[in-house]
Image 1 (cartoon, rainbow, N blue to C red):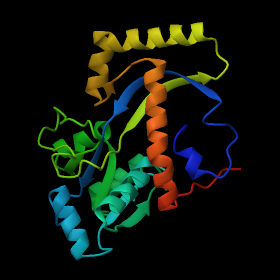
Image 2: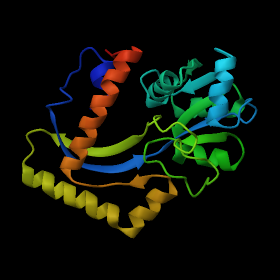
Image 3: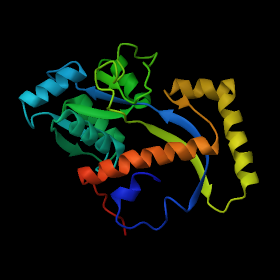
Length: 233
């Protein structure tokens, strides 16, 4: 990760800022915060109110301490001035199962993974996250985080392409064109929509700005929240 790892690790085997050149942003993966249907709140404002009145009684799952499913919720807790019990799991599948079973009250992951469970009534969608979030056509009753009253809860996820910093500009331009052309094809667009993924595309400069803007926001936030990832040997 070229953004969060700067703050999550004291040492890295690469330079996230200088070792890579941007090619293209590919897709955005909107996130959804959801609750177990038996939880005593049905909306995001109700969650905040309940946690304030019942400190440390609400449990929230994550797919790991350094995962956006934890970092994003810590960020929300800081914004809303609340505190939930964090229960980390080994990946999305385990955390989702914990939410469905009622082992935890709250989990946040991609709309693509969450919406089938919302449709089936296994979980209750509270909000789709991100400053530019829109309602998902498959779960139209789930509001955006702005509609829910917390526009500052701006958390999302993306896929992009970067290459080694010394890659020739001609090669970067060719890769960028190929990526953007692919994203514009009806077949690719239809498949991405099926999985709740939003095609973005754009220039290398667009991607660099996205990375720079998010570094400026997330690195200080992660350091303020004192989140650290355990380095693997």
